[in-house]
Image 1 (cartoon, rainbow, N blue to C red):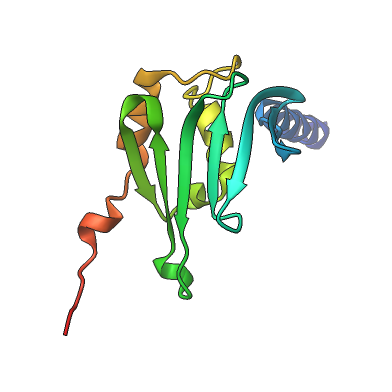
Image 2 (image 1 turned 30 degrees about the vertical axis):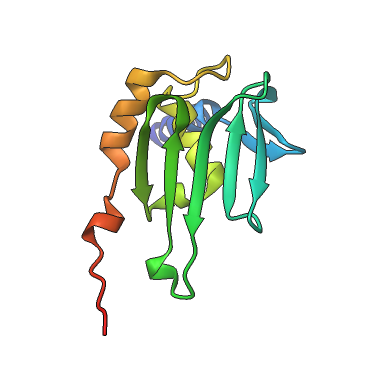
Length: 140
């Protein structure tokens, strides 16, 4: 009997984790979260830059990926344009989809497709790796 209860508990835990995860898609110029279109996006510079817009066409977030032939040296710069906030990261947030998912999960992006400035400031403090200020440039 204990084995059955244990298995039922495990199944319920796994199911609850899956229900909490947001389904994020970048599809045909739209940011879709849990089947709701909340924003628009556009990729430029060969897919290395991403602009995220509200439905009125106002650019809210700009992401620039600095790609290097050595993946260890590649990173992304994320700018919240209306709030003069930015951060640099080499982490999982380098992926556009993972970045948007984390922004939504952290409630920086609201369900209405707006940016919460207070949450954005916290997000920047949490994820900024200050890459350019830590880089040593060796010249001739």
